[in-house]
Every structure is written in C-alpha cells, then in structure tokens.
Amino acid sequence: MPSQPTEQAVTGVGLDPADWHELRAQAHRMLDDVVDHIASLADRPLWQAPPPRVRAAFDSPLPLTPTPLAQVHAEVRENILPYGSGNGHPGFMGWVQGGGTVVGMLGDMIAAGLNSNLGGRDHAPLDVERQVGRWMRDIFGFPETADGLFFTGTSQATLVAVVAARTRALGTQARRVGLPTDRVLTAYASSEAHACISRALDIAGIGSDQLRSIPADRNHRIDLTALRAAIDADRAAGHRPFLLVGTAGTVNTGSVDDLAGLATIAAEQDLHYHVDGALGAFGVLAPELKPLYAGIERADSIAFDFHKWIQVPYDAGFLLVADAAWLRDAFASDAAYLSRAGAGLAGGDWWPCDLGPDLSRGFRALKTWLTFKTYGLEQLSGVVSTTSALARSLAERVDTEAALTRVAPVTLNVVCFSYGAADAAAPNTGGSVNARIVERLHLEGHVAPSLTSVDGRPAIRAAIVNHRTRTVDIERLIDDVLRIGAEETADSVSAEM
Image (cartoon, rainbow, N blue to C red; front, top):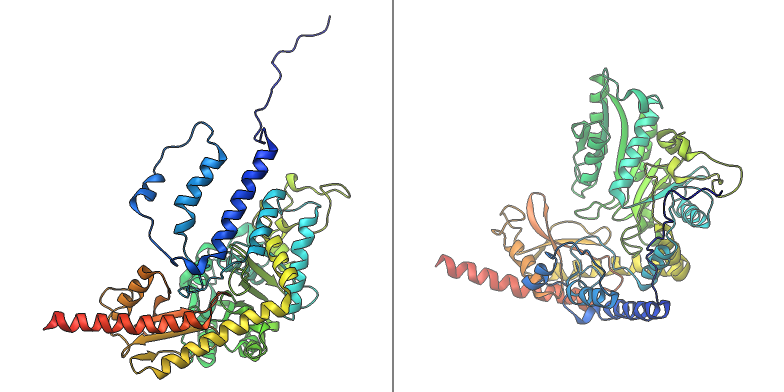
C-alpha cells in the first residue's frame, strides 16, 4: 500500500507577471520616462526641495497587499524624479560627482536583469570585471601581477587598501591575533587628504590618531620635508610606519601631490604606498594633465571612482593593487561553503571574495565596461580635458572680476573663490557672505557650487565634473554670484545703518 504524503505539496506564489505583454509595455513607459528625464535635465530646476505633500507620501505604512506597477510608477514620476540631488544637471558644480549617462543606466538595467552575484564561481560577469581591471592596469602603468575589484566607492576601496597594507606589515597572522601591543602602526597623509583615510584606520582597528597629518605647502601639496621628519620621529619613538598616502586631486582644491617624490620615500622607508585618486586619478588620461601624475605607476595601490570623471552612474568605485597576492593574504578564506570544483558552476580560478570582504557583490562592472566600450578612451579623455578647460576658464573669469578673489591654485577641475576679500566668518555658517550666496544659488536652481574652507576661511567651490557642463553654465555661475553677492552686501550695509 503506497505511503500517504505527510504534508500538502507547496505551490509557491511566485513574483513573475501573469501578463508578460503588459509588463513589457509598462517597462517601456518607465524607460521612456527616465530617458525623457535625462534628456530634459537642462530645462528643469537643478534642485528643488520636496514639498510637504511629497514628504508626507513617504510616511505611508508598510504595504501589505499588491499595488499595480503602473500606479507605483506614477508615484515615482510625481514624487521622486523631480526631487533628485541634481548632479546630472549641467549647472551642478557643488561636489565631485559625475553626471551619469544613458549608456551607463542601460548597463545597470541589464545587470539587474541578469542578477548575478559577483562573489565568485564560474560565469561571464566575472570576466567582465577582470577585463576592466586589466584596462585599469594598462591606464595606470601597473605590472602584470596587478589586480583589482569594484567597490561602492573610494572610501570602501581605501579601507580594503589599509587592511592589505596592515597585513603586508604584520603578516597574515595578524588576521588571527590582531594588532601588536608593543609597537604602534603609523600612517602618513597630507593635511589636505580626504577623511576616508582616517576613517579607514579607525575601522581597521589601527586608530585614527595614528594617521600623521603632514602640512601642505602653498600649493596644497604634501610637504616632503615635513613627511620625512614625521617618519623619523615615529621610528625614534619605537613605532612602526607602514602606510603612506598620496592624493591625486585633493578634495578641497584638486591639487596633486608629488607622486614621484612620495614613491621614492615609500620605497626608502618600506611603506605601502597608496594613492587616493577619487577626485582626479583619471586626469592621467588628459595629455595636458598627465605630467602631474608622474610616479603614480609606482604606487602599491590606487583607489578611484568611475562615477566621477568617467561618468558611470553611481556607484562604481575601484581598488587597483600592484600585486593580487596582497589582497589574497588579507581576505582569502577556506570556509566550507566557498569550496571550489574543477568544473561546473563552482569552478573558476578568480573569485573576488578571495580579494575583498564582500561575498555578495553586484555587477557594477557591466555599466563601467559598457561605458568604456561605447564611448572609447579618446572620448572619455575628452571629457576630462574639456571639464578641466572649463575650470581654467572659470578661474580666468574670477581673476578679471574685481569683486571676486580666487583663493587657491587651479590644478585640475576645481576652482575655489570668494566674493569680495576672503570671508573672515567661520565656514559653513550663515554669518558668511559666501555661505549665503551658495545657499541662494541652490534655492534658485540654476547652478550649484558648494561651500568649503580654504586656509580656514569660507570659499565658494566649483568642481567641474559633469560632461554636460558648458561655457554658458560657467558664465551663469559668475553672473549669479556677482548679483547675489551685491544684494547680500547691500542688505548687510542697510542692516548696520
């Protein structure tokens, strides 16, 4: 007598559409909306605050029952698309963010449809990521042993570089026993370096206090004499110098450290030499800028972002290391669930989970690969050259205006200037004329620089990164700064009378 089943058969609900034809039509409508959004960026406000009714829409409770996709799309169109951060707009100059492209967006769409996990195993998406890594090796002149991985951005890539440098200094046993108690690891970077470096030391357990902030010279580049003195002082104190960070494009002013000089010091002192290229690494593509990058090929690692000058949609950061073995030593694991096979899906000899902390990884490589394949290196290099030329033209215009003062040299694509003599008020406060100018520019929605501090004083900072920015946007920025500055100054005088 046949045995009776103890449980009823499971009949899964499933999430595929009942009508693929209708889904396809709705998908086309959604794609058309996004393409229309990108095509009309210059015709709409750069930024506008979501009104109360829109904010209230996001206070709705968790949905328990299905909602038709067309209805959800309508909410996206009404409550999300008009209220983005504005970095695609040609007038966006506030922070170092690329404008994105339709090609990159389509790459993201395909990657999402494929839904690959790039932690490992044997599938073509890994070959795409490896090819991008080889292209980066060629661009930066790295050796055949070089390898790299995609990350969310340079901050995450920097953390991985710090862990690799720590493992190089202490050996793989540090993964088990932790940091030594008898010697302090010390690292070195310019006072102009990005905060992600100190954060990486914090997260890696070394401690942010062990980052020596080396003074910068008048061109905002690290002072090599002061650097040598700091290393000598730490060695005399019994510490263990292990990491030197150079910056290829400082976040405030776009200055490029003496990368060759740093490479020499790193070699002499047996330090891991890392280059933070988040803002400006791809300046190496522009013939007129390439001499600034002499020595970058001698770095042990470089962190950079494709979502900035290369215009790949967010997010797409990358870490390139001169020797893949350093990453394997720092991250490879022999966990049972990561066992390999000679053939089949569990095969393959390049698993990114051996080279970094992530087991689950998205297919960021596809939109980047598609960008390089579609536009080619010459056209992407042209974007770097054009935006840098626009920055120089902005600086020239600032220098010709009596009401404006340029407060830093222009090395790459960042221009820092002030309305009137440099503000003495504290940065990022309403007491600064320049702060009020920037705030009003954002509210008007035509151009959007940011506010920063240079040599302790507030300054307007324009980072020309977007491939859509043109001369008319540069002129609009200057004209609006002059107009608002005059109005704010007049108001201040009237209030004092």
